[in-house]
Picture 1 (cartoon, rainbow, N blue to C red):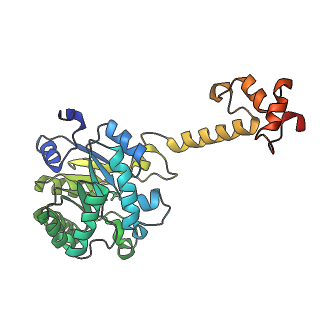
Picture 2: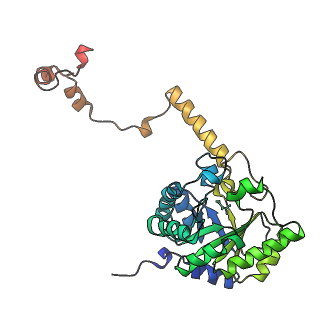
Length: 305
Ligand code: KIV
């Protein structure tokens, strides 16, 4: 059996470490479905996150707290089928890693059932024990510090973290705790740019920023923000497309065409041999008796209409 083509090989955390060592900036984005994952893969993104932002952007929840492991797995499987090259990170949902044992069970499902190559866990110092247990079991972990959306009920609201002296010190401690626990990378969410740069300069592992300025080792974005699919764009995001407008325009045009009888047109229509239909419907005098005699009984013929 011949080896698969080089470009089809799935990236691993070792490749991410090599990119970081080579000074390459790492572009990561979320995906929640097959078509988006395959497009991100085709575009060459080395890492895709099946984020629990799934809850808000795909499922209509008000926060990530409602997202379940089963919902994550359902979407993860589609992403893994869609992207054959990128390293896929599964976001461990709220309360799926409260203890090392629970974390092992949840991460095990992500790897075995979902097919991901790594999992992401929110929390620095408070999650170090869990990260360590997973890494010891051979499960690559991406940390996530700064704003941790699963703690929104404790934090109160979405805000930049680490602005005060105490908060900045705590964030540095979180970053080191995640690295020392064995994480292969760490997401810094809503962190002042200077602090994110200082953390990045002090860590061996890559930092992946979202709202953390330009000096992180890489960036991660929620794909619906990048594509302009929502009606709100966070300050840290840049719209690279306006899919909301494109989809609205297309949906309105489709509706108008259906209502006007302009869709489908000849190009979208399949036709059959008229003589075959004439036979079936008893249109030809020769066929009338045959059709009436056979199982056409009960089906109104043209002459009966
Ligand atoms: O769920 C998510 O999309 C995330 C990113 C914001 C990093 O965790």
